[in-house]
Image 1 (cartoon, rainbow over the protein chains, first blue to last red):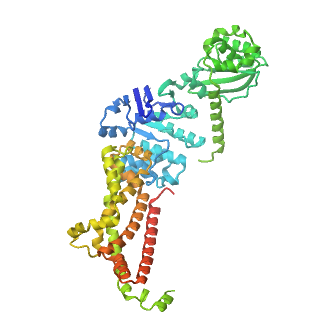
Image 2 (image 1 turned 180 degrees about the vertical axis):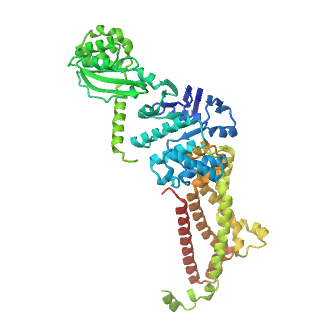
Length: 395
Length: 232
């Protein structure tokens, strides 16, 4: 079990204090795989460095299985660190040692005899599928193999917690998938609590039971995958179920409808979508099973006047509908004069539909439309992933 | 070519008995002098360099004051011109060895001059080990001592050997100067036979021999580096 309590980290700089972690609290229960995502600069790296006490937090507590690491003197901290396995972004294998010796290193420094450490290292290498490469030096291994050796080394001292800091950032997607498979397997067989820091939503989708979104040193959203996904308008939900961006014409509008089998019958939703008039185009969509729930998101395009009644119908059925552009933003603009940007974007749609919002105004609470940038980003990521899958021949 | 030189010179170059009778011993003396000095330089210089790395801001035990002092020691040590160091150490050498005559007479000055030189090179080499590897060792539960020798020094081994090669070759150059205080070897041949007795042929031949020695040591050093370096 990992507990972070009011964790705070400040860096003094010439231009004043920079707060990297701003009173962060997080609990990862035993044997869970938890993902932490967030844009660069959100504090992900600082979080993991503070968690391992490689960087001393300014305030707050780090508890691993109930032991507060921040309170320990050097010697005991060293002991406790053996209960934390760490997988690094840059792997950080020792180039001067073979794969086997790298895995044996934590055991050797703990005083285990060479033969015993070697035997245990062989077991661990077998667990990550590299039994035959014990004698190879890191430079003779591929990136994916190196990271698997890294995992084996992290597991050498039988830790109860495995921390992974962007473990797949240097790997292509098929290698990443394989690596995540390995992490998932060892976590299940050894009952490990795993914390994965990543910027790839695909990593979260594949292995995580729960996820937290980090921004500006705080956790802004957190929960089991099923829950965060069902919070349709939330950042994590949108990032976890990305839709390819489809081009929208000047006069057309775009909305997204999101749903989960936790709340709806999928068949019913699909029937509802099928019954929409022909003027409403279903341009993009996804339906998949995530964390035991079928979750879906569809992108509808059309002239604002055709879209409006469709939106009303879907909302009547209780579905979550959010505006991406044009017509629906006209509504948002009418409701909140503060949204200067959407107002500017919306001129044509708004002009075409004066007063049309009365019909839909009741549901203004559905607000928080995602910005166009995040949409584009999600699309890019997706495209990149597909490219990676195609390009990879390794393993 | 050798025959041509012999024919043309008669009593010079390879038929110069002042040279032929001394050269074998001189080579051995110089090698002995440099080897002992380099050994002392590395054995003392490495820990000194490590101490600089260890106490640096990103080191295992940052200590600004100690780091500053060590840096000053290393830099001052390298700033003193060798000839000044050698002359200053004549008294110390006499006290230690009873005389400055013989190849041993050059050792104290060469060794002491070598220590800060190698210390700085060693510090650079160890600093080149990525911080991530040090952190990986910390996470493995290694002590600072284990990290220093088992990770930092071990990972830097190719660079440390390359630095030792540079040091050794630099010492060969400096050891020629010790010939002026009677400390034997090739330096003695250059100064007392080539320069003082005005035999240019001896100077030329010693230079050629030194060139061969330097090349041989460089090749040997590169060979060891290749053996230790598993990154390519």
